[in-house]
Amino acid sequence: AAAADGAVAPSLRAPASLATEYVTLQGLAAGDEVSISYVPLDVMVAPRRARLRDEYGFECVCERCAVELEGDEGDEGGEGGEGGEESGGGGVDLAYVNIFVLKYCCGVCSGTLAPRTRPPPAGEGGAADEAGAAGETTPGVCNRCGGEQSEEEFVARVQRAMEGEEGEEGEEGEE
Image 1 (cartoon, rainbow, N blue to C red):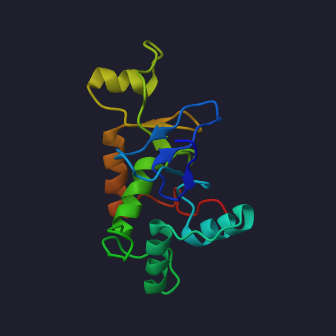
Image 2 (tube, helix red, strand yellow):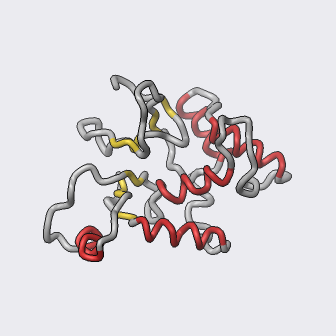
């Protein structure tokens, strides 16, 4: 693709520099929109939309913003509603948005996690070697800090979030 549209639930992880390759977060079919996020994935809807308006000059009308705004209205000004609420946003609901952020937002630096595009260098140690030795997959590599999140770590984050323990990590976002 020659260009990518902006979205706060993007289909690509933006590269650290423009000389780097783009990596799809999910499978894309021919004709699917290609998008990147202009802000970290964990920034809440109100500050995110204000930042997009102030810094980039547009009012975001993507499905994620629509769902989160709808959740805010139903929550009496809260930060999103309960998961599972359907929206008119093409099948995207708050549960999907919450899972999306847990899967693709780095819990360390708020960068974007994307599938590894090539195997890690052998013998470097760390999570990649440990995951390989344990037979685990490493679906997420952060574009900012290089940290990794295995499928097992993602599942644990979802379980903590469902139990209300995912904490304030990433909930405030940048303002």
